[in-house]
Image (tube, rainbow, N blue to C red; front, side, top):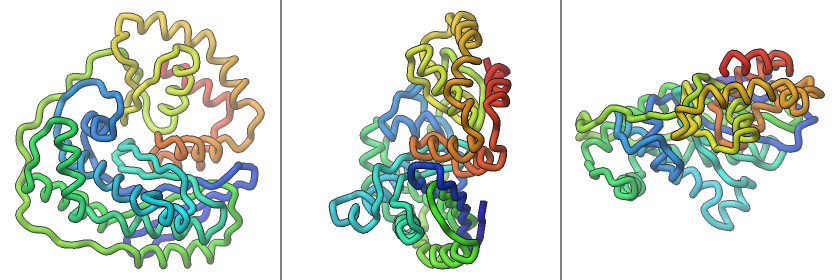
Length: 312
């Protein structure tokens, strides 16, 4: 894996000619309310709580809209960016936006530049207000400005980018691209922020499996295939809804089918790290740091089976 950093922008590139295409992601560190973020993104969620970090979660969803507008907002934007659907998640204490793109460095750099340029938290109050109304929470400009300051501070510290896929580049080209990308980042200053109030505790109550990182993604796919439910992935667990009393039965069923599943899905690959990172980035269910971790770990099918068995 090639990596480079210039100012606050870090770029990691893993080339693998066996992969079908190229997946790209940009992320920044942020501890947000995943319950609120999922509701803001229109996804199934455990409850209607409004925990600490909700304002930052809504702002992150508004930034997602801005990134989508820059990359796929209309025919002209799509023709310029060469990007397909954009995904987003709030896992691993990061906000991650990911997409597939044409497999050459020019297209990769162009799409990342457009996305980084769209990371303007002070300019998305309209979308922030609309999302607040959609999830039935009060719009407060001072709370919005507090979230803007929090996210802006994180962006100024570090923007992490990763590219995984069928690409042919050199370390020198990665260095050059990183320097160009760092020049795309500009922030507006704000004032008038006020510490948010009115938060509630999380009301999650149902069947969960404790896990973290890329292993959550593999476990969620396994459960989806064998149990027939669509798990919601959280930073340290996956949530299966109102099936708490069925945990022992579901665990027993999954353990009995784990070995056959892992061997059939992963057994023939020696580059699972790259394949898992690309797959889960394209599905929008892994952070940049966790994608980097699985690329470096490059687990075997046997290791995945051992790890999943411990989670069940």
